[in-house]
Image (cartoon, rainbow, N blue to C red; front, side, top):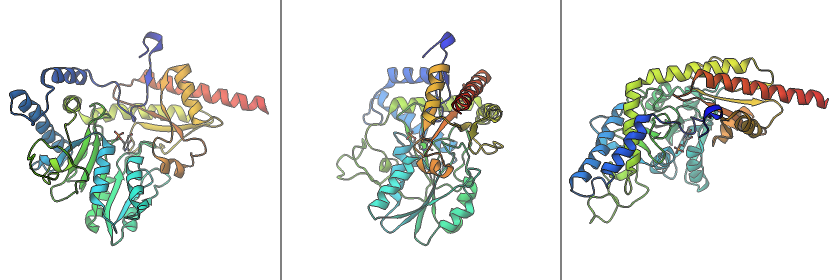
Length: 399
Ligand SMILES: Cc1ncc(COP(=O)(O)O)c(C=O)c1O
């Protein structure tokens, strides 16, 4: 990392939150050094202690997500949200089923669905969002058919930052008797989630973003009356004589040795979120996001997408500078200003297609995190203004 005058201004928190809170780094190292053994596979004290943190974290996250606290075994750990979303989509859909999803999805939803569609097994409907970046629950309702098995929706768009009305969509799904899955990759840790209140049947989460864990840990939380078929098999550490993968949770959806450093990181991430208060984390990021958007509004030749009033909005803002490719803007921000953003299609091609940014090679995404400051935002606005002014000057000279 650059330091002094070279300080990196990190505005790529939607890709991964960075830096992590200090207590997370400390706990990861301390825990792994002291107790980095295989959990629950052996009977010695350290293995039991390692197993305990896994089980305690199941309980803690089940509560955090408003899952069924009397069934914490239904909080299953995997590698990340992509892993969890594959388990959900492939473990729920069967040949002949229909699935409803949206144009706001990440490829970790689009691709598993498309594979099933290509294999001829299922049909899918991708519901567009409105010009404000929100999916209308009535459009979800209208897309539901007799054979619709699952509605799966991105809670917070990683391109537009809009927070989707999941409670209303959950109500529709309940009324229509269809399973409701939510991808909480961009919201978990920054927006309160209550699966029971929101009628969410299954939630996918990733550990390395606002949950403040590390890469390689994530999972899913499954409500009590919902069954997801196992689609992988392997070691579970128990019932080794049984020739098949175990049906009972959490084993049904867990495979092999878990990422214990990741479990420790998620545990400490929960400590940090509890100490800050999730509302305070959101308020800080949202204030900075509003400041960024207001700054961008003053710049000629800059277009921002779906962030007019910033209501129901994450701290993620995508823009384009008229006359310059998104990738070049990102490179310029990086090389000349030491500002890290993410350009391109953000693994969400349908969202870019709908807002008309495919030809521009996507957009430049600024995503604010808990450790950004007012100075970071001032620097981002002034850099964007300089780039936009330069492009305009070039085009005037070319005339
Ligand atoms: C909305 C959304 N869904 C899914 C993912 C995939 O997360 P992971 O890479 O942790 O699996 C991301 C990551 O950027 C995302 O933003």
